[in-house]
Amino acid sequence: MSRSAFDLVYDELRARWPHSTEERDVATPYGRTRVHVYGPADGSPLVLLPGGSATGLVWYANAPALGEQHRIYAVDLLGDAGRTERSGLPLKNAQDLIDWLQALLDGLGLTRTHLCGHSYGAWLAARYALHAPQRVDRLALIDPTQVFAGFRLSYLLRALPTLVRPNEARARAFLAWETAGTLPDETWQRLYALASAVPGRKLIAGSRPRMAELGVSALVLLAEHSHAHRAHHVADRAGRMLPQGEVAIVPGATHHSMPLTTPQLLNEQLRQFFAPTGPGGE
Image (cartoon, rainbow, N blue to C red; front, top):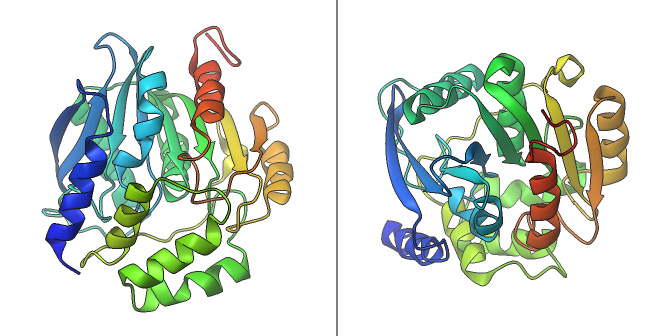
């Protein structure tokens, strides 16, 4: 795979963001991190963490609405495809990811923030909220994986070819299977497929976070037709682990089609949850 092909599609998707979006490269001990920043400078901060291979650009359909009241920080994850560099300290385990995210928040000048993650990004967001609850106002988890339940065997078997010998064609086939009927944006699909084969990616596996110990107000949004896990099973477990949290199933969505194919519904739920006068408000 040509790295320039990924960069070309990356720039194409970047153009979908509002014109006033800023690009920041924030120094951390693990390398420089690319952050897409949008929204009023005095808006309450909201950090968005994408799923694997999605890059921070995946939030382009959410940024305009969420950026009306919030200062949005959409992050290219350390160890994944995108324009975050991996240099300096080695990335070895989940604690390194936590330390990197903390250094990133320090570099952005965020002593407290709302935090929202999808899939792998939700796993990281949950672990960070448990690690540093004093720095997280509210936590939103969008079809989180390895948080309340493990992956379905059928999902892992379908994903296996892209994990063992990743290439664009295998990634596109896997994505087409998981998102069938939802029609995610074509440019993003190309970015996802190219990202899956970027050399040197290092996604971290780790244990499930102890969600019953979470001391932060939380919202869990699950994709009705997620192939990664059974939505109703995860909803039941999340409801029992987070008795003070909110849990909802997003109709029609699949795991990888979120947040792209449900932006209006997703935006409204997130806006209500993160609003100061909304559920769990100040």
